[in-house]
Length: 259
Image 1 (cartoon, one colour):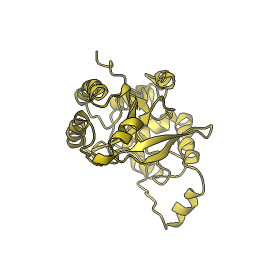
Image 2 (tube, one colour):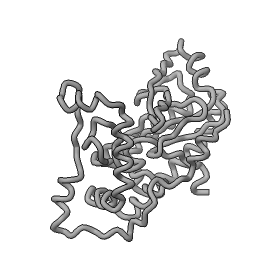
Image 3 (cartoon, one colour):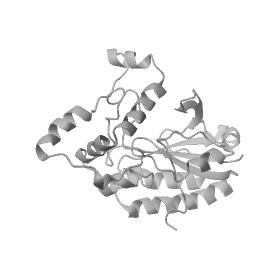
């Protein structure tokens, strides 16, 4: 299947801004600014605010937050600053080059190298074709898109490189066939809708949910074990068949980035 949608998003900047040009907050402004713009709210079923937010589709809140970011770029830079991120890391994040859960170029370079090797092994071990990778989750844009985290319509639940997990989508042709062939070995991938787009499109991805399954290709379990231990918040994997729609806050990973 042609990977046109994936290729169209590859290498694109998330937010156009020169971070170093954004004026810094005065020392006596930081705490009040952080209290007004950063939230650790996490709503759960049964809570009145959870029920209220549940009445609208997740994309309502996701795009409200995304639009707020683009209308308040400088303020958002200072949100990331007061949460402890340096300008260089913020710039790489907003340029769409290195998500914030990677605290150095070295560890990100190692991941990209391992993904390039994983691509080759998966295409051999699982008979997949055109394997690609997309990183999702809060570390990509810096904030959670989960409608039940943070303030409803603005980015406020900020990622933490020491506790936020890394969400990786492995895109390929052949996942559904591989799943069907390995169900007797305990391989069960639950389909669930995700990546809502403005036009109402919902991509369906296959769930892995942080569990190691022997029925997976050996290279995948080796990769999972290594990076679950290596990343502060661990690793979550999901799978995508074919050519996916990719939300603007997701990051297709160029495997030649460090070549």
